[in-house]
Amino acid sequence: MKVWPDDATRGSRRPGSDAAPLAAGPMGNGNTGRPRHGDDIQAIIDAHPQNRALGGAPSVGIVGAGPVGLALGLAISRAGWPVTAVASRDEGRREKFRASIPGVRAFIDPISVVDEVELTILTIPDDAISDVVASLRLYSGQLLVHTSGLLGAEVLEPARAAGSQIGAFHPLVSFTLDTELAVAAISGATIAIEGDDRAIELLADLAEAIGGIPVRLPPGTKPAYHAAAVLASGGLVALLDAIVALGAVAGMNEAGALAVYGRLIEQTMANARALGVRAALTGPISRGDSDTLKAHVAALQRFAPDVVELYLAVARRELRLVDERGVLSPIQLERVLAALAKPA
Image (cartoon, rainbow, N blue to C red; front, top):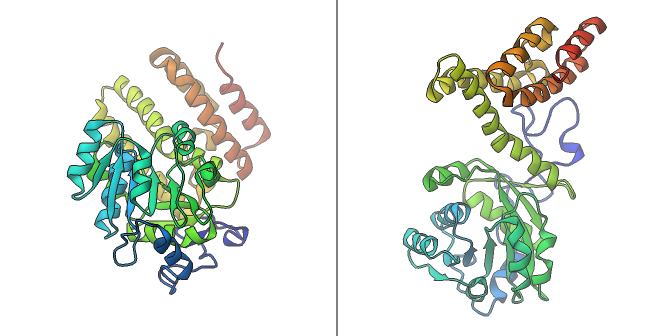
């Protein structure tokens, strides 16, 4: 399993870059002989009174049959772990889940899932987790996990019983309505793991079984980790929407704009991976071209006024990177700042 401790990011390399693989944690990983389902994990599997584990893997139940729950359930089932129960208030989603994974028992109430399985995974909205957890009570030896990218494992504490475990399991994946596309995206994806020490091994095994890369986050960092994920996913979509809107001014439809500017995005990502983020920055701000920036802002005010604020916010972040590189003179910096002043 991988971690992001201070000693994993020493020097100029950054975590997650091709030049600096994430360091293996104390437990190692699947390529270094990490024990799989050791005595402590077997205790989790064995203790539940309804134990029906197959081949050393615990029976799994999913609470929430939306895009995340269905894709995760399919990935887990195809990895050979027994997915045996699902709960959802939506009848259509329950039936779709049951049709997708043969042998699954479908319920309305999450309590019924907990009664059926050793490992219960909550794939429900963040704001619903507390209410659902308040209605649950684990058996000794069970494991309760949520898939929130923001919340820590401690939100599950009210459901804990003596001898049970809690954890968090967040695949860094964009779960679209295309289930097969989402399942495929899990392969190679980072999966952030938190929880009790005995549960971490089991969750790491699960992550690897479905093709993910388990990463244990440092305590207290999950909100920042999740905010970065939002920028990388929803934030990028918002940026693409602005790009498409400006492409329309130049006569491009959405597909055309994505084809033209998508290639530039791919080139920029390749440069960032090869050279680092700061060195990958190009464009008028890196050259101190204040007249170009003024022309951009004027065009945006005329054709896409709702994009002005986004453009200026991104440009100011670019200017910070340029300032750190020290490539512009004080006069150039002053002129760029003036060009980026919010229009009246």
